[in-house]
Amino acid sequence: MAVTFLLFQVVVALLAVVLYYVHRNLSYFKRRNIPHESPHWLKGNLRELRSTRNFHDIYEAYYNKFKKLRVPFVGLFIHQRPAVFVMDLELVKHILIKDFSNFSDKGIYYNEKDDPISAHLFNLDGPQWRVLRNKMSSTFTSGKMKFMFPTVVAVANEFMAVMNEKSQENSVLEIRDLMARFTIDVIGTCAFGLKCNSLREEDAEFLQMGRATFQEKNHCNLVLAFMESYPYLGRKLGLVRTTKRVQDFYSRIVKETVAIREKENIKRSDFMDLLIELKNKKNSDQDHAEESKGITIEEVIAQAFIFFVAGFETSSSTMGYALYELAKNPHIQDKVRAEVEQVFEKHNQQFTYECMKDLKYLKQVISETLRLYTIVPHLNRQALKRYVVPGNPNYVIEAGQAVIIPAAAIHRDPEIYPDPEEFQPERFSPEECAKRDSVTWLSFGDGPRNCIGLRFGEMQSRIGLALLIKNFKFSTCAETPKTLEYDPNSFVLGVKGGIQLKVEAISRS
Image (cartoon, rainbow, N blue to C red; front, side):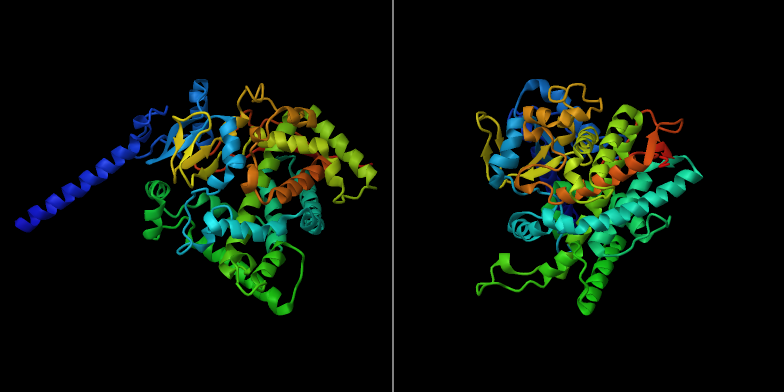
């Protein structure tokens, strides 16, 4: 009986400690007189996430609710974790650029020990991120993009053949799926040197695994919330985000590719070649500085994984949304087609790397698409040291605190972009861009930790869209959704039911 009573007391004491800790967390902003919305005890300010709303909807509503206060930031609870939700563009600039040294970390959950594929450049923090970013930067120069350009064009030409066949069979096509198949084949070729056959095979393995990466969860929402709220404990408990079959697939593909290339001395001037070069890099000095060491096979797998996943989903979504808007705005589509025709005529009907800089209006279309349909809803940062907001001594970001920059909400702010729901590529003419601060458009981030694959993503999207608009006319039909319904389960901006458009091949008689 005494033992039972003692155990009861221990349980009650532990419960009291947990409840006190949770209460203290959830009263964090109230104690500091920082504006915030009262949080749910478990879900924080993300009550409807993955049930009826996605991050885009939640953060845009939160941004609009507090915008009139004109404060540097407000409080937001990511489940039980208090985070700074940035409202002021000047503070955005400080965090991303001016005071980047204090906000270089993202604070995103990863587990290098139990889930090494999650320890990629997008997630890593601290010295690991800095060293790897420096090593990887050389792989995304304009010179390297020029090497990969013919490979992307070759896949795009195959894509045109498939589009022609499918449009002959049925004039109404689901665009998002076709764009995904194109980008899967591009990334598979450039990242792994493999012919994925996603364009012609309905059940291509790379396509299935690409979708699984975004759709399959390793844990229930409760455990995911715990990982996001208490990342240190999550790592101690060995919790992982990536499902085992996704880990096994990419590990197998990368190891097999590396082994074959090294054994047969195969050189393709693609992304995998560049990773292999980094892996086999010899120490350049006697001190064996981290900067001069090669990367491990686990790091090769992780970087190939994020290159594949990020390049496949972001570019395919961007192209799908662009075609949706061009179908709804035929005058803009005609203007893009006229520019493409003019550029091809200038270059003797050859799609060369030099064509890219001449496709200026198409670039504006892509930029406006990414504004209106921001694929990744926000930027994550984490303070390394206590930070007093310049000019606002009552607003303090504590060391280790999560920071959320609501990119998608900023992109739809009518004070920055009048009539934000309207599709207007002219917003991104050189003259209009010069009137706005760079941090008003954050589709690829900004500052030293912007998207390292920016050049490749732009090249892939521009090639695909240029050839599609040159060879096909896209228009709305009865099956085209008047308004898009977004998938609440998707972190990126996913659409329920796809996007159906009428596709007609343009005659070249």
